[in-house]
Length: 326
Image (cartoon, rainbow, N blue to C red; front, side, top):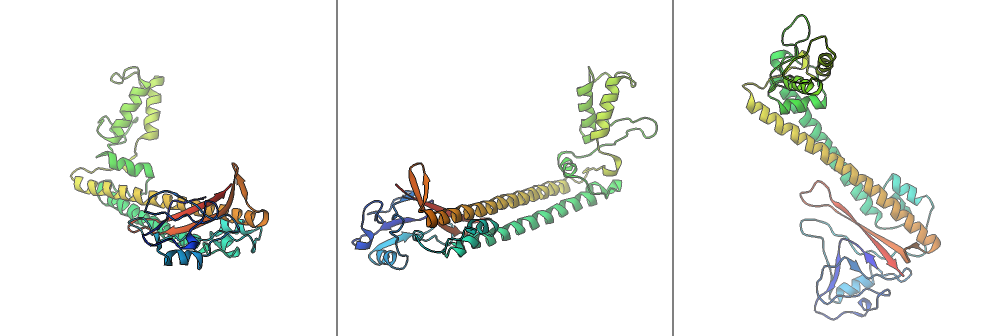
């Protein structure tokens, strides 16, 4: 039985030709009307459907292959079951893990092209997403330096958390409210540093509105927390009278986040393509050498793969089908 999330075999009104007739486990069952199941009966190993013979006769006799889902280009083809005989190098799965499709190429399987096309397409998408993220990151850092940090002469690049703080607060506030002498934290809670000092007081003082003695342990612990988390003068900022620029900054930093997340997602798809090619290569070698793989009483006797690049989407899809027989 073939399990796949892609194509559907169906027949129109003309009669079913002999090649399309058969019983479950011995031939393709032709359906009288279009339906949408995810399972199609496929032949057992050794009883292959010739992709240029039987399948062609099936189509010529009135059957048809329903194409890809709406919104996608390309179509996966029903490939024949892996031949029982043929080259079966033991290293094919390892080659597939390193370069998807290389193991299938060594096994002389046409689906090697699907793995290779998917790999190239996904890598191109990853490079594009990473490039977009880098460009947008440079844009929001330049905006912060030329607008919010310019009055204070700040030019040193900050950390990722630092640029997120510029998104959340209009101003950083002063680090030392009264220059000279001891450290006097910012008191305005609407600023970033003022919010840090407020949190330190709520955390370490019995009453955040009543200051203990400066020499006391609780005051010193709060002051130490402020030193570690507040923004120094070299990184001070203010979006005062520049709220429009801050809105542009926020949109740019969010766009950069989306680009980097897209790059991570594409990398995950690349990893899945390598894994699928590895499993496919292992199953194919196992079938050719030992006659199949037993899974819960069923024999895995074939694998089908097709790649579908989607229109308007950052990545396509690799459709994989597994054939099982009792």
